Length: 469
View 1 (cartoon, rainbow, N blue to C red):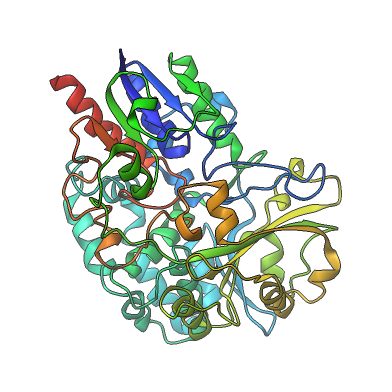
View 2 (cartoon, rainbow, N blue to C red; view 1 turned 120 degrees about the horizontal axis):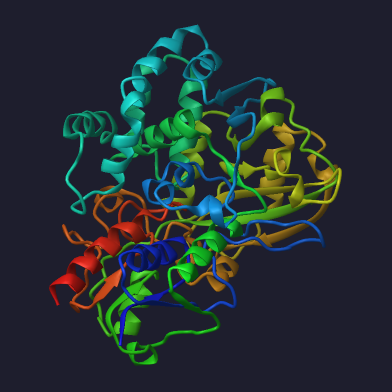
């Protein structure tokens, strides 16, 4: 009998398996797709030689993840590549605010009226970032805080809505960039704890940047899988699990799936009936005949570029998708241009480009024209660079990855108390009604992102049970 079976070979499932195998437990992973990866994959979606990331592409949380940093993933091929700027937010006048590794450079891009306010916001946390991020991403109960005072101060700053936090800024540049940071998790700007979301992304950039993985996001998953195999773990692909009886006998079962899927497989009925899924995304992967012709020079060297004219436009787009059940006319966009630091991603002189906007859950329309109109506002002539595009709306994203219910790439709405207490209002979020069944997906704390911490935290709960039995 195995000690543990993991269902789903995304970053969280693989991390959970690795953590258990490192502690001497026998582990097998079962994945429905023909390769490992989940939300961290790389495929030729458009033309031969153009390697795209179907979901995540830039990895601020991955580079800062306490789980990943504790593993020897670089020995298994993972290499972080850092663009000159982690992120830029261009404006229609050709200028841009930036999120730089340097706090001073970032503050200066906001203008003199807000530079001091930004520095006072982030500088108290940076010297203690490694401890803070470990404490924050280990909530609610998987480890005692190492620095409870700093964690409490961070909570007091970040738990109010981001609109409260940005009220300390006087000009639109800082407000707009920060609104875009919150938009990465598709949360309305006025929501609970959205200030903390923006702060985490900003501090991640200052601490270790927003890198891409050489060769694509698949290299993260491949490194985890290779390490697991060296530890004696097994991986079975092309193996769809529809009920617990499909799995071999084990002392514990760990699911890197949506709560909905877990309830169906394990027969939990309506146990997760109150769990809410969020807005979906409409994503386009581009093969380009050269770099994006950004008007703002800062955007040409940034790995990630946020698109939204101002904080009001961003807030309107987020509300349309998440609360008003309509596609925004001017979508807020997140774009990533890996080729500026990774020439292996496209043929010589060409580039891959990744972009998405938010849409209602399950939306079946085509947002391509609206996205490209937005791009043309900040990069005139963009359409002339397009060699091919691959589009994916909520139905296609859900078909590729069953965790993306309704096209929700966060596997659950990041709003209200569900930001922190997911998938149930419980201090043991990785447990389920069955004492031998656990959940480790992005539906559990600390939530969305390629960071492996949900798997790491769930593994702690699993090995405590295994040691007791």
